[in-house]
Image (cartoon, rainbow, N blue to C red; front, side):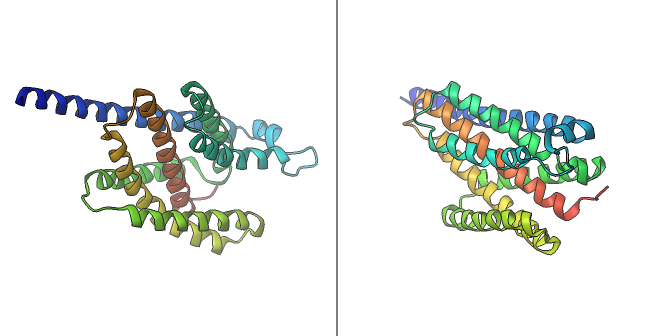
Length: 237
């Protein structure tokens, strides 16, 4: 009997580990796609101009489509997770990563490479620390996470408004609040993923889909944390 329980426990631990391996594979894969595209486009001014600048020197409508399309894709992926096949979700996820990379290319036109690299590692350290905290804490973060998501929606709307206002002061405030929100949500999301990983009633397909959603959510949190820190710490060209 004890041998059976030990074998079952070992199996559950391995299933949970595989779930998190898949989560981080999706997250790092998305970061790799986005980072490569952002660097290629952002460091090539002629290519950037061809894609996003009109003949008259203004910003092309394509730029705004690419900037906002990832939001719609992220909502579609998470909302249709039960209706779409794993293959369809993966294709949408790759498309999302690519569009985010094109959108992020603008940071290379604003900040120097050293500043971007330094901020990336700072964001990685903060993200990793909060991920470990969220995974290991015994405190229920549900209410805390719900509150932070409400603040997230608020700063997202404020960020869109500030695109048209162009206020540096408002941008700084949004970034400062964002650092707190995205680090907190990282801990909350890791706790939620831990519960998913240890859920005994999920099928293999459900686990695979949820690991992709988990990778997407962690990717979104990391990128937003990175951008918030870059706004606060980055050195402009």
